[in-house]
Structures are given as structure tokens and as C-alpha cells.
Length: 254
Ligand code: G
Ligand code: G
Ligand code: MN
Ligand code: NA
Image 1 (cartoon, rainbow, N blue to C red):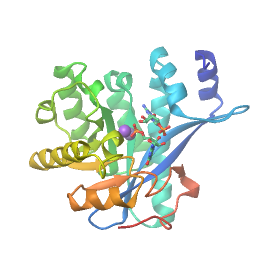
Image 2: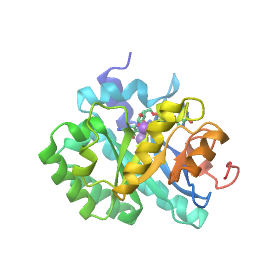
Image 3: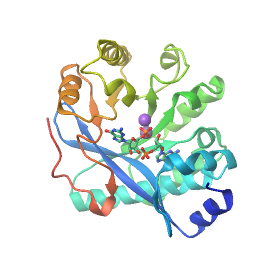
């Protein structure tokens, strides 16, 4: 079991690392960006996945300083990565519900952009449906302020929450990420395929781009491209890697 003091110590000792999962544009087949994903390199237990420690971080509020570290590190490392690769990339950073509701959010985002020199237009903040639904008056204000900085907002794990579809017409958002539970059986299950098609059609009708997550097979990728999904990520395309190991080669392009 992970306890608060361990997490606090991990932050102080800089035991967290960012990995970057490639995202491709389905129109061009090129890598267009990355999703930044946190890992904990524990001195005895090795690499620990966020699913194991983020719930504790969220409960204890430690997600706020951890999330700020994540944001700064991801912006900084992607600026370096772009220099090495000689090409621009977007970077998507996950925000937890507590981070999204925190009063320092705007200041932290601005500080991360300023310190790294990353253009705001290359930053995407991913927010889950649950965090968006928590309180809708504040939510709209927060989203509008963030977008005023020039960054983009993505709704993560779309389709898994309890929210009504109507909220995406109310909130100012740029991207929807189709949850991998719908992508998994897209080729075998007509119902999942219908959900994915409906999400894409609705989003495009609202001028929102769609990213498919969890793409594990070529069939899924081709299906999504055929249905005009904008971008995709997943094990078939490439696994998350540290910035210094990230390459543009070796992916399964369309
Ligand atoms: O990388 P992995 O599949 O193990 O991630 C598990 C979950 O942790 C995903 O739902 C992902 O959104 C979340 N996650 C990964 N990195 C971060 C992060 O830096 N901040 C937050 N809030 N969540 C993250
Ligand atoms: O919830 P979120 O989308 O932020 O989670 C992203 C996580 O999903 C990453 O941490 C990564 O480990 C995991 N992931 C990425 N690609 C795939 C995939 O193709 N299949 C599965 N099962 N998990 C994936
Ligand atoms: Mn995500
Ligand atoms: Na997701």
C-alpha cells in the first residue's frame, strides 16, 4: 500500500518521471504530438504505474504539487524533444479533478508555459468527464480562462462518465478522446462501432476534433481513419517512452 509520506518523499527526492506516448494524425500518418504520462521510479520496487499512486495523491491533495511538477516537466521536456527532432509536437497533460478545481491552476499553467517557452498552442490539457461535471458554472469560467491562454482542452475517457451528451455543447472544448473501451471492439462489436461513429459525427458537427485512445490493431486504426477520426494513440502506434528515448521512427503509419 502506498501512503502519503512515501508520496511526499518521492516528490522531494524527484522519483517521478514522465513518459510520452505518441499520437498520430490520421490524415497524414505522422506523429503530431504526445500524451505525457507520469511514472514513479521507486528505489526498491521499480517503475510504479499511476493507477497505483494517483488515487492516494488525489485523496491527500498531493496531486496538486505532483501535477504542477508534471506540467512543468512535460512542457520543458517536449521543448527539448522538439529541438532534438527538429519538428513541432503538441503535448497533452492530464489534469486530475482536484487540480482542475484548484485556485492556483491558471498561475501554474502560465508559469509552466513561461518557464519552458512552449507555445500555448502546443499544449493540450486533458480533463475527465467527471471533473467537468462537478460544478458547471465554475467549470465554464475555468475552461474559458485556460483557452484564453491559447491552449486546447480535451475531454479524456469520453463516453465512460455519467454525464449527458449535451454538456459538450455547453463547455468550450477542442478535443474529445474516445475511451479505449469503445475502441477495443470497434471491429467486432457493431454497438461499439456505432458509439465511435456517433461520437465522431457529433464532435465534428460541433467543430471538435476526435482522438481515439487504446488503438492496438491495424484494423482498428484503418476503421477509425475511414470514419474520419482525427488522431489516434495506442500500443499499435507506439508505447510511451522517456523523452530521451522517444523517436519518430518505427511506428506503424497508416
Ligand atoms: O499510463 P497509464 O495507463 O498507467 O495511466 C493510468 C492513468 O493515469 C490514466 O488514466 C492517465 O490518465 C492517468 N495519468 C497518467 N499520468 C498522469 C498525470 O500526470 N496526471 C494525472 N492527473 N493523471 C495521469
Ligand atoms: O486515461 P488515459 O488516456 O490518460 O490513459 C492513458 C494510458 O493508457 C497510458 O498510461 C497507457 O499506459 C495506456 N495505454 C496506452 N495505449 C494503450 C493501448 O493501446 N491499450 C491499452 N490497454 N492501454 C493503453
Ligand atoms: Mn489521458
Ligand atoms: Na483516457
